[in-house]
Structures are given as structure tokens and as C-alpha cells.
Amino acid sequence: MRWLDIDAIVKAVVNEINKLEKSEAREIKIPIGISNRHIHLSEEDFKILFGSNAKLTSIKELSQPGQFSCSECVTIIGLKGCIERVRILGPFRNETQVEILASDTYKLGIECTVRESGNLDNTPGIIAAGPEGCIRLKRGVIIAKRHIHMTLADALEMNCCDGDEVEVEFHGERGGRFERVLVRVSNKYKLDFHIDLDEANAFGLKSGDHVKIVNKK
Image (tube, rainbow, N blue to C red; front, side):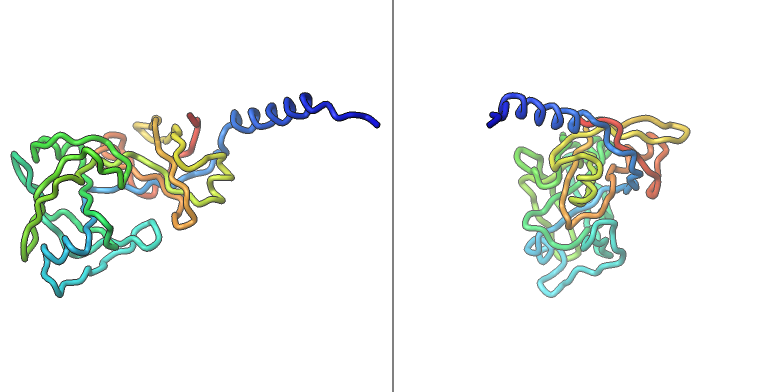
């Protein structure tokens, strides 16, 4: 009886895994979605701002399933100034989160860091005012980290995992690359690359343009 060379088998398997990890992601076009400043509210905070009987009014479905833009807006107030008509995005969240642009920090007079959505530890607070009241948030203001939403099938096809950081390339008059793009994987998502308005304006990008993954960290 011939004994199996276990060491050789393990080495072969490891080599195949390494080849897969080093292979370039397929050049799949990923649509760009551009976000302006906005706010996600908890239901409790919404009732304070708009009244106990108020309800969110959806006016537009967003690229991610179940997400929508509302007719309701708030004013956010910092140490140096305020920004009016900050759009509410639904549905309600467990905790209120304000997503601003880097350029907004100067007008508001707050220091804000780039964060993944939902990572609110050690983030600054702000005041939000609505027609029926105002709230003083102790935390929750972020500049959203650029990221790609994708399904499990998308992730397999592009050789990505949830939490990966990738580099994407785009074309146009100001064509170039974005580094440190976070990958977020869930079958609740739809394939979409999210950047904010500051980033889009700097590179002449618009919603509906495309990027492709060219490198994975």
C-alpha cells in the first residue's frame, strides 16, 4: 500500500490558495453612487424633532435596497455655524448618525474623522434642529469612509471578503485611483461604490459612472 505524502499535499493546497489570493479581481464595472451630507435618525430623535405623530415621508428610493431619501430635513449646528436642509435618509436606525463632507467641518467648526458607517466611538457630537424641537448629540458625526457594497455572489466573483480594503480605478478627464476602499458584503446589498460629494467633485465623477477593482490589500 502506498502511503500518501501529507507534507506534499499540504504544500500543494497552500500553493493553490496563494495563487487564488494573488490573482487579480475580475474587471467588473461597479456603478458609482454619490452621497451628499445627510442624517440617519433614531425613531426617538425623529419624534423630538418633528413631533410625536410625525412619520418619515419617502420621496426617492436609493441604490441600496430598503434605503430611501425623505422629504424631511434638519438643520445641524456646530460651534462656528450651521448647515440647513440636511436630508434625512430612512429607515430609522438604532442610533442617530450624521454624515458630513470634509469641507463642512470648517463651516461647522468641528473636527471630524473618516469612519465606517456605524463606528461612532470617539466621534464628535452636534446639535440638530427640526420644526418641533432640537437634540444635542454627544457623538455620531462622521465623514463616511468610501466603500463598495456587494452581494456574496459579487464577492466570490471579484475574490473579495467583507472588511477587505481594495484599490479602484476610474477613467475620464481626471481619471485616477482611490485607495483604501472598504468592502462590505451582504445579500441585503446591491453592487455599488459609494463616495461623497467632495470626492466626486474633485475628480469630476457623477452617479452612474463606473470603477473597477485593480488591487486588493
